Image (tube, rainbow, N blue to C red; front, side, top):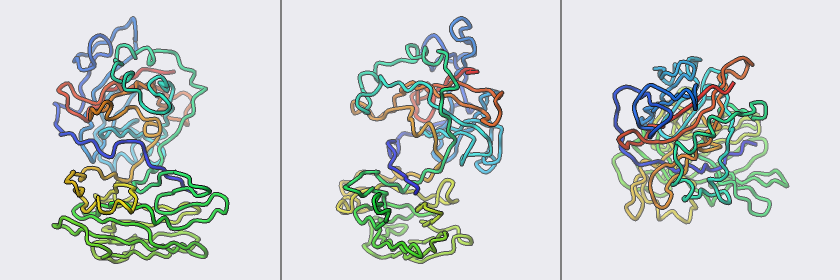
Length: 396
């Protein structure tokens, strides 16, 4: 059973983008702020530490980085999938590693320093976050780490249409369906809804599950309220996606603009894809690793909130939500063990928790380099978001 819980990341950070000269700026690791330009390190306190400011300001493309060479690797998304020339990729606040579902390499990551003192009862402590500094937190990066005690992982798929993971009685909320962990039965979850962006990126839908049966086949009906391109609000119940997939597995695709099922293999304009793979029940958007489109999803919300979300781009109160859509993605240690907290003390910014991660550049080779890595800022020298400041050193 594939369990996809709602992530604790912000839906989307609304900041302007800009471009610095070059993809990265080399900065010194010690002495002063992380924004001081330079090419030196302090050999007495951290002889092998290096720092970079990564230009990850693009909302759609990753910036790929090689830890061995300390350089950005210029690759397209397609090239990166097969390349072993990069180890870690950055896009806004998202970070991927070149292994598992993210690339053709064997890179894996582990959390080495959890920074539990930054949290109280699982919640970020604003007082600690806002008073921490790169200088004070450097000791966690430079400390010795027992690599044999770490649990490494590679990246896996993460889907924008996910469940909350909440339990009511014996029922687990899996998002668009419910799972009873005593009877192992699944059923339609009619309480949740999502906003969905089309593959073309210019139309939207509000949808939920209407019916679900699972026996010799998985039979599901989804209802859609569609906002066609050039319009500004949803029209109730003007598209229905009825899918039937044999219990041996398969997939079904739907184009909500034209309210029709389409062939997943020959039609690239599908907007939502239902997949049955073993005991995995998955809904994909046409985005990220799932498709070539510009789709995504925002939610889940309770269906009782339907009147709040009357448009795919604005709420009934006029709040802009056009950038709140998440794409399907590849995610791993940096999403499961987030490197930041957001919106502390009502400040719409990201603050680092200075966790230390260990990156194994090739988990199939015991002699491959491993690096301790820490993220110290999310902003450029001029305060522009999407420029993660990283520092790292040899962990072997």
